[in-house]
Image 1 (tube, rainbow, N blue to C red):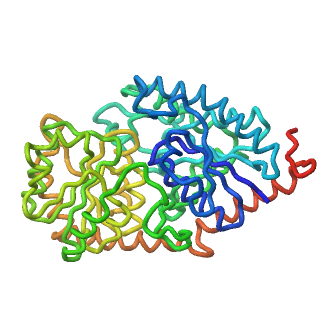
Image 2 (tube, one colour; image 1 turned 180 degrees about the vertical axis):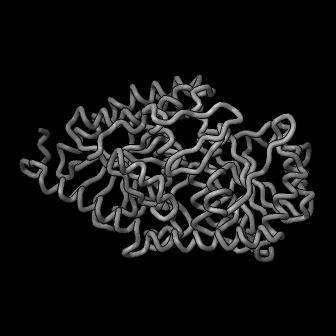
Image 3 (tube, rainbow, N blue to C red; image 1 turned 45 degrees about the vertical axis):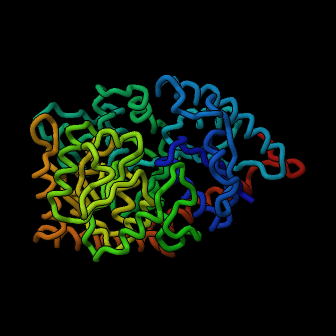
Length: 459
């Protein structure tokens, strides 16, 4: 039987969609092992659904990435130590009766491809960002697309016109994380016969996928969101969490609220807002008169106005984390104030929740552009003085989404995309067909792979 190795970048936002994809492959009859760091495997089960979990070392087995002196230092260790550890793991499996047929590696773990090549294992890239963002990175890296100067609107084939601030920040080549920017721009170096899988669906990004297919075998295999049909029994959870969501508090509070009455606020697991922006956001939420559920990580609560976390007013609840899928699925939520990370964006689309976009960096400005101007499922808050989004702007956007005429159109669009997302993953849908094509490809590799006494022979 075919056996697929899945290698995500070791963070929640990358593991979650790739784990969901892995579960989908097991439902199609493949054996799948997801490989992550020893530090992460300490906090999760050795098997999630029918997916087996295996570990490699990143050099920080006891305390993980947060104990590294910098992200660059961690990434160097992840590649150096991780490459050797991964190669040893593959060799171990290849001497067993369940050798790997191929590797699906996260495009933010490019060294996974190098390891696969060194041991003769076929490899397939998996992108956890949108097809639109991926196409921009690829075209910029090839010198086909130039990022415009400030104030200039760039006309682009098969993509909407965009100004500089709407491009993914890693395409600007002047950000704070040059190593990650290099990963982003160099992540698609294959040829037209190479598979690249995307956590999206054909109907959502038709034009961008068409562009990508000119360069490689691009296939959309998403949304990798558990609630959807054929979600392999995990309903409204990814099957693992590296954080501790406050399920009981959140859901009890939400269940007491009327339909479409709550603003859900979350900026993901990495984004940090400056104190002044937190002040404006707090006052904007209170001033909106709407119920709000605001996720503020424990380490970030010091940036809130004094006493706000404990007493956000009679309409608010502040928590350190939440079961986001359950929250978005709850009928009380009428607006998602989001940083527009791709997972959060896809989840909101899949649940039909209108979005108030406050993008911060990386792919988020581009996702926000599409949310408002292409898919029509939300509004981008306008940045004012000092680079801040003011309380009045926040109140206006919330009112427009939840009460105004514009909000009615946004809700209708959100409902439309929700249905299209469901259709994509049902039997015969675009995503289901793409996954079936990939499974057939993997099974063919397994059939044609030379073996000796049940063990894989590397050639």
